Image 1 (cartoon, rainbow, N blue to C red):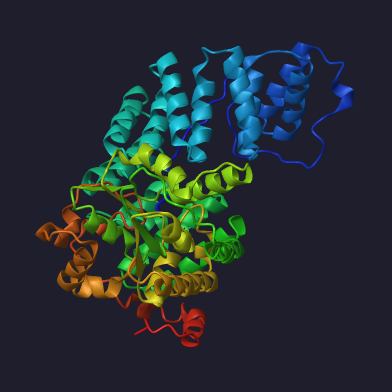
Image 2 (image 1 turned 180 degrees about the horizontal axis):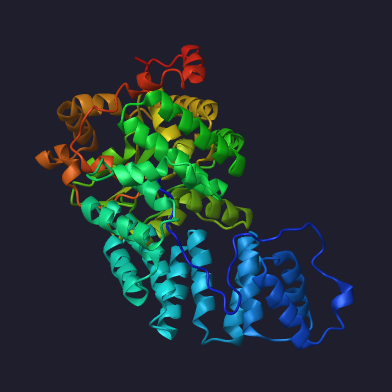
Length: 545
């Protein structure tokens, strides 16, 4: 996900409206003294409790209904929604599939199942079930909305825009449809049009906070005083949950940053990230443990001959978030032969599948598994780029197992890098980003690992210093293109003219010509960064200036 928050999606129930104030209790779901109730009594009680938001008690009655062998589409659907909201994803999938088996003409369960698969990043299954929902009900606005989100995640923004506009046509009062369309338009670089739809979202539902946050990430616009005054008002915080407050604090920090009120911006950044950590604790330990494990894995001598099939030239872009990787990808994709996969975790998926197959005594090479997955995405392209940045942990395995693989390591001044991460409001997978100390530890880990790999594979890894790139783009880009062995084209110097979609936290900045405005920005936040300045002062890092 990008740093601008994930799109809104709809989960559909039949009879019971969804509630955001569910009553959770810790007890056994089965209750023996309910078994003498009739079918009608059980379902009536279940639906009543669900509508009141008491999902724990409702779950007992839904489960009892199923255990008794009764069949009602509302039970499987609504119980699936409960399980989904409780994080019991496997059970939710089983319930939806059972509902589809029993009631194959009910479009809502197909749509809900598609939504689950989208959240699991299984976009092919997500698209299949969502399209089935639309096939059954061609006027299903929420299914079109979800299909638009799926296409956005697949990088197919023209289709994403088309299906989201269809959702708007079917449900012109749905505020979330306009907000999703605005996000798609931002990814396409159509900022002026996006702002129109963000304003439409606010007009339809002034209580939504996400539109204000997204506005705060865009360049300053005329007549912005009203919404900025609102975002700083005391009333906006009334009756707001933690997630909304996090968006509000980040929005305030963004606005103050643009006004060069850096001390006040720092205060809101701290408030936003501290609150975020209470909801999403740092995943630092997971990141570092995984890095150590994969380093040991890369030292194993289990390399076998490569497969006969020809793997296209695979350029892996690695490093920290906000290190210039999106700019690099835009530069490279000016080459018409490039297929930029974006942030697709295809190599890790291949590696895990290969390990599983090996455990089953299957005789298969890692590059064979990788090529099979690549062929699904790459459309026979001769050159592909993959910007899954945490592949820095896999570099040793990539370069020892994948023929025709190359790595470009993006890095920049660590204080500028960490400040940018701390300001970015990332979503899932980057939970460490809300702690400055943890950001520093991840930064140092990737620097250490990449230094090791650069010594092992000096001809296969290119070091791209973002600070050098933006201060002297002509020289740095020519050096990079020469290393890749490509013919020079002046278009490489104008990546802002690239029409490709961008869905990262850099999606706005990458639309501007290459500039060095962000260099040294950490100095405006020196007090905020004091704890990590000490950390880097004690290391061998020489990128602070």
